[in-house]
Length: 113
Image: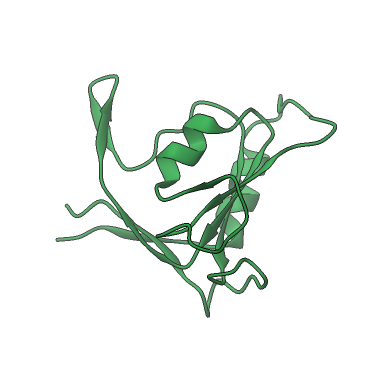
């Protein structure tokens, strides 16, 4: 049975609040995740984990609508996304990142399990 998680604003708020020792950056970078990265801002990644790996603590990752799959092993545990730094993840962006509405533009993380 597939396990799906819809990234909504609450997830971003939860991640922001989860680490009181968050490193504040004067100019945090914005990274983008889109299923094809065609015609969207850069830097863009087609996988959430690739954006997480490229981000620095305090950065923001904007995730366009789509279903993101694929699992990997980290430290002997299989997972879809491995977070080991303080980041803001915001799903629910339109394909061109001009509008954010998690209900209209769901970003789904599917472990296919």
